[in-house]
Amino acid sequence: MQCPYCNKEMELGYIQCRDGVTWTPKEQLVAALSFLGKGSVSLANGAADHSRTVYAYKCSACKKVIIDYSAD
Image 1 (cartoon, rainbow, N blue to C red):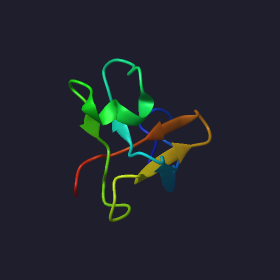
Image 2 (image 1 turned 90 degrees about the vertical axis):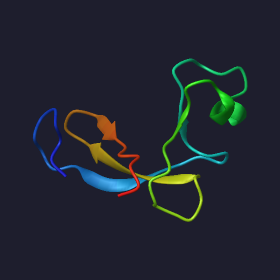
Image 3 (image 1 turned 120 degrees about the vertical axis):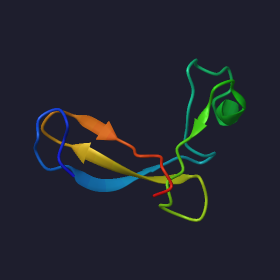
């Protein structure tokens, strides 16, 4: 994948978290329950048969990480 910021090649890897990987619009008081937050989005993308591991692309040049959370 090409980095959308600097156009260099990105490296495919994983982001892992014990209790699932989610994005929330506001910081949650208890991080382990972030999936319960209003507006939260599960970032599960098929990297594993559970939601604790997601594929992510890392750009070493500009220090960005991109997660595509679509099921495709």
